[in-house]
Length: 201
Image 1 (tube, rainbow, N blue to C red):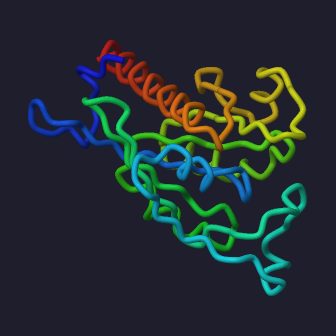
Image 2 (cartoon, one colour; image 1 turned 30 degrees about the horizontal axis):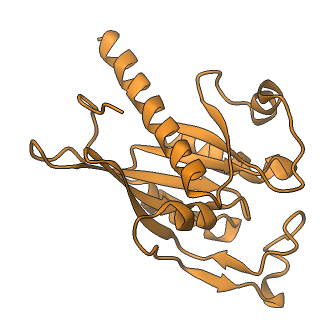
C-alpha cells in the first residue's frame, strides 16, 4: 500500500518510517487487549488485573461470563504496516469506572478502531460517543465470537447510529492477519478523509 502524502503529526525525516498513534477502543470484554496482543510486533504492555468478587457490582459479566481479567489502565503495542508506516497501538480500558483515563489516552491519536461485540452492541455505545465528541476518525470492527449471530451491516450501522461514511469490517481479534486488516482499513479511511479535506480547500 502506498502511504506517500499521508498527512499525520508523526511525520519524520525523508526516508524514515512515519509513526502514528492509533486507539483500540470499545466496551468491556469486546477484545481490545486480545487485538493488541495478536497484532503487535513487540511484546505488548498490558495492565490486566484479575476480576474479583469485590468488583462484581461494577464489572457486569453478562455475555462475558468466562472473562477473568480486565484492563485497568491501557494496553500498548506496536506494528509496522510496511517500511513507511509504524502504528503505536493504545488499548483503552472498557469499564465505566476507568473512563476518566480516556481523555489523556486520546491526545495525539490520528484515528481509532472501535471493537464491537454484536451480542452486546450497547457495550460499545460509549466508545463511539467518545470518538464523535473528540472528533477522532474511526472504523467499527465487529469481533466475531463463536456464538455471534450474523447481521446485515446496515442493520448494525442503524443500531449503532453511525455515519454511512464510517467503515464497518468483521474480524477475529485473536488472529494477527485479521487484526492487521482492520488497521489497514483504518489507514485507508484516514487517507480518504484526508483527500476529501484537501479537495474541499
